Image 1 (cartoon, helix red, strand yellow):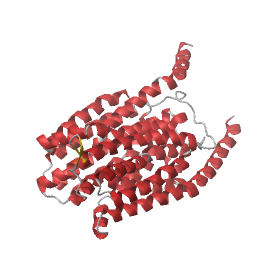
Image 2: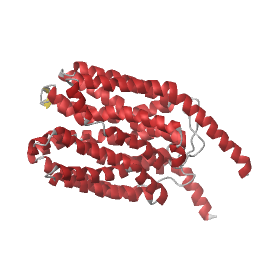
Image 3: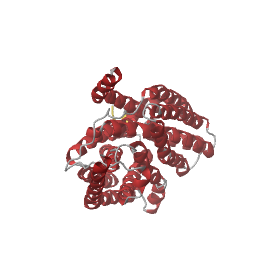
Image 4: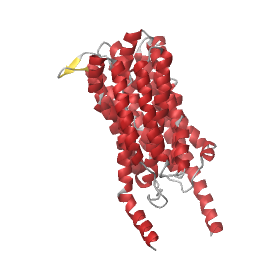
Length: 438
């Protein structure tokens, strides 16, 4: 009887205590690994200057990191789900923290491109473990506020680097990029290792159930990873993710290069801050704010309409940056708008995936969709090739704008009706099984 009372008390209290604590822990972990991606652009020029390696070759390390950070997440997610809600999340994140530290320390000692690539492999695997678990936990704990919860979690990854842009640039200038890699990797990876032991997933009955509405479609059927992969809905989501992610990753990796090529990188805007410094801070802040904002919006008006608004504005932002980006203030404004209308893919797509395929296997299912980011990373070095072929960055930004508009059409005209049909069929199959189970 006592056990039953304790279980009931825990279940009733969990939605108001455990899940908010877990959300905060996940956000902190994401902040601590944000520099792996969003701080990378600061290292490209110093590495090029120190070793005279081609910029495109250096950017291969970024592509490797993104590829491993995403393509290994299904494995990390499967391990976390397989080991259960109490052990899985904390073990995967703790190991991820160790790998993050090792990866950046390897970067600090890299005297060859192959060693730089090795560091990218190690840090990519570690970062992917942290990312998959934190997002998986958010969609499981917050079925009733899934867009907002995933958005806040992803915001930690998108905006976290804004806290360290100035310290990182100062340390690079004073002590070199090698020392910066070493100390940031050691401190941030170590912190993830310690904090990760506090994470856990919800036990049965601890989190509120999903509630489908006319605006936010949520299935009552849980799809296994193999079942999900057999649906056309998943692959449509995957293609859409690749198109938007490729555009955003190009901006993430090349923003410092674009500013330099436009001749405005070191132009002072105010209080001694250069165009690039201001742009990076604004970009990271807006990238982070976009995730909970558009996640919150999608909880109210639906995932697909929110995609149309965000990606449509993003297409306009790419075009304007290409046309007017030689002006320092225009560069800051339109680069910031790009990041604001790109970052939300990391809240909208995991939420849509879990809405469509259920929460039971959410960690591995959202991780499988997240591999689209790794696929899109392969296109990042091609931005330099496209720039040369089109004689400047303006042509590159026109291409990315078109990709955004294509996804807007897919979201409204294809994805929404496809998800509605799949949900109707899935909910009907669940309803048919209830009398048999009884």
